[in-house]
Image 1: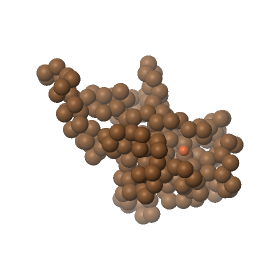
Image 2: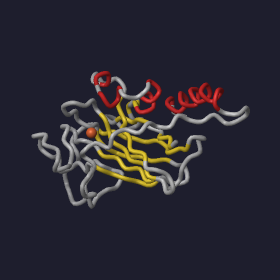
Image 3: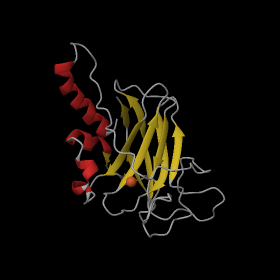
Length: 207
Ligand SMILES: [Fe+2]
């Protein structure tokens, strides 16, 4: 269980005392929704797998520090959700999106896929290999997510990095409650056995 999930369980236990009937199982805090932003792909790329550091037919690998972003998709009772489609999109290492609307005068990185998706299996888990997104004006560092499960409303949210100096000034992040901010702010640590890369665990709870 990740620290974030444990915090949610603890928070849910406290909140549940006043709301749930005696004996009801505490609910997890739902991952808060966040703005989709202007840079969701207009056309999904031909290569849309969960490794954003390699693009089909492209010799160059993505520039930037390798990140593994992993976690589980859960419902509010803590049950894992199989068949959830998890989509991720983000800026390249220099802070530019693969999107014609991004007027940032910075070169595209042809080796960076920019968008990826995968569907969770029976364990509810997802995993992306990507790079640490660059900063761009007006925002702290972040990664966009969309989670789609048949029969439920899509969740669109954003994931943040603990320790970023701009987190305290980011309007979208600050809009969330302290609990909500904790749920989407992830601590990345060096990946065991893979020097130079970092891993973060972002569990996503659908309300
Ligand atoms: Fe963004």
